[in-house]
Length: 99
Image (cartoon, rainbow, N blue to C red; front, side):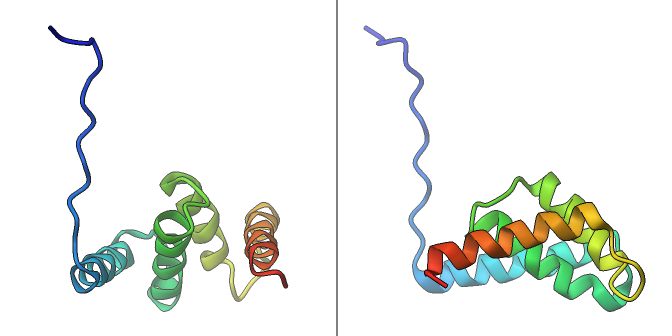
């Protein structure tokens, strides 16, 4: 008899080296996907990767929206909403670290 519950698939267990390799591959792939200038692409992709996948602090879409908005305006007037969003992320991290 079925209990009516769906079995949730287990995440495959990867060794630390495989996890680092996959994470780095994802970060590099994001460099091509972020819609920002070439100059700011690496920092934007790295930050999106860290906030979404390491910190679990934002959804992919939310992080892309705010980080890319900031990356596009780094040398101009910053997008205030995106700047405030990222500042909240930094404050959250500081609180976790006890800083």
